[in-house]
Length: 310
Ligand SMILES: [Zn+2]
Image (cartoon, rainbow, N blue to C red; front, side, top):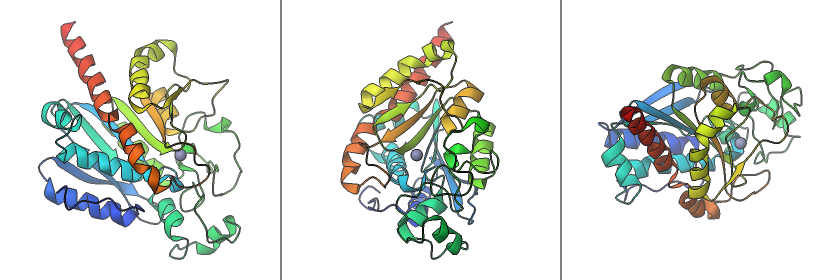
């Protein structure tokens, strides 16, 4: 499997479909592949599960269109988890997967990713998209979904107070007419609510930062801080503490507030501005993030051992 597998340099929705299907065929007894919903343009939102344990982790990427490198990274995690003989992957696979299960949703915004990579020509609302993009065919700085809504400003948490909202569809920052107006986020919220995850990892780019607090009350901050510190250590990313009153509407803000379980937003790669992360940075990004799942798994296993001792 490892020999056949080479992640596409520009990671498209079709690459994701092909890779997930290949994984499903090859490791049918180890994984579940599910369609958790559909995008505005009818693309599938794929969820893939590895492991059978009762402690559940969700890891997702590409809420934001230009941040498709995060999809590539998450599929790479899946391949390593299933087949790498190297640590930490081997240990997770051989020792932990009956205690912890990992759900991966590599591409939350497949329409937006397709728009960034291939332009608007195949979209049913091509003219609207060109208007929103100032008639330019270069969509590489687009963050929103396929109809101009920023999917990480769609969550029902302090949505009314979201700052810098352009008030109409836009390449970036438009929060929509109401929370959960977009099918991608409605699907993800339903899925997450159904599964009651113990930890959530949201992948974005860029800046080499980790957001983890939002307005979390202090007892929870104290409880999650060791995990946050460890994630900062293994990635060498900076842990961001809130300044003033943070603006809501994002996945991690919602998850922390609703479930009171640890959740982290990772901004991969050195800051690259309003564009996709260039491919030459990928190797370093993978190195930085290769201990993330192991660290989360260890935290959950450790917590479980402590519960048993009580
Ligand atoms: Zn983002």
